Length: 159
Image (cartoon, rainbow, N blue to C red; front, top):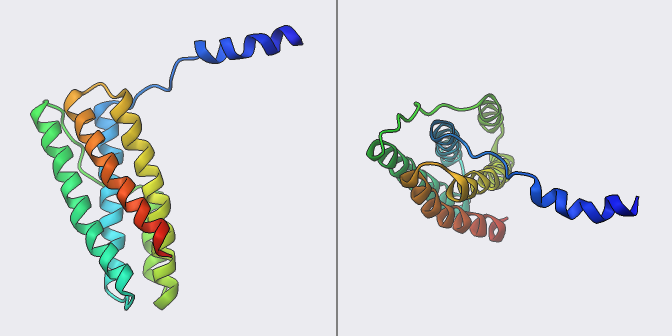
């Protein structure tokens, strides 16, 4: 038993890091994330009267449009075909729930969904920036990380 405890740190060091996303898989996940954040932001803007939610949602539409364009440009520059963006089934369910919610409940649900989506986006972009195989996409991912961190700071300060 004590020999096993001694070997555990060595085993951990020998375990390979998680395999990096392929460029196409990374672009697909990033595209879905951008699309979700833009779509949900447009929905909440239809009804919210909360100035903070309005400001954040407007920023999401702009910033995620920019990150999608940055990734598309990086992919094209390096010859990677970006898949067309589409929502995942989970994201589709979240959009449907957001459409059903009303008033303050919609604002609250939107904020919660954005926190979760940004945590996932941060992990995705950090992982690709560190482990990705395509230099142009790695550079774009690294730039996007700082924007996503800023969004997370705003979300944590907001509600």
